[in-house]
Image (cartoon, rainbow, N blue to C red; front, side):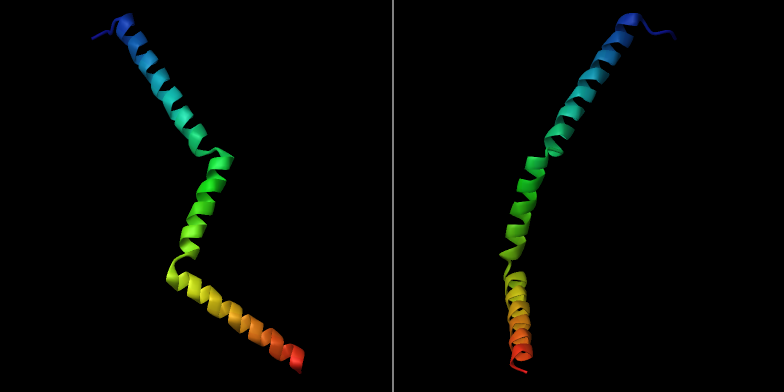
Length: 73
């Protein structure tokens, strides 16, 4: 069953609109400034979790003690 040219043109136009919309969304998602801001927010939230925060504090204290011990020898 052959299709008429108007329906083919409508399908092509719809496909163009969908492609344009997808490209717009990708350009927003891949914006470097947005990626940096998103990463900063994610890292800040992760570092404020008690388990991570206290773990890093403990690791820092351990490294500090090892450095002081090494300097005193």
